[in-house]
Length: 173
Image (cartoon, rainbow, N blue to C red; front, side, top):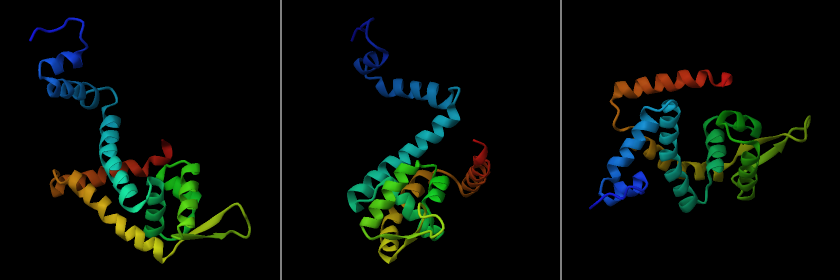
């Protein structure tokens, strides 16, 4: 097949049956060797984790990303205010607020208004919320295990060390 000189690189690659090679070249230039390659790799890894998990949670359990974040924080730590969930997850206040409202409507958690500041409520996970979290958690854990299975035990420990070190400096970002 003769190459069309006016074709875009991806069109030429598709025409020649070399599209996978072309994508690998672009991936290398942008994700592996680009000027912000660390950010790209972390983002890509997170996207490849988040998109399938949150799609499954929404379809199977009617639980959105921020609802999962709220459930996870409350199940892992205990009662807290929404502002703390925002600070821990890096999610916007309006997203967490909508998730909290939806979980309250679904009777998965309750609010206890702060008598000193009526704008603030303590969020308390109830038994139904905990059961829901326990049902959805295995999907998230299994996806994480799948995505990390290529690492040896020592590499996994190194990754944990590095990620923990990065997270300790998060207030400076």
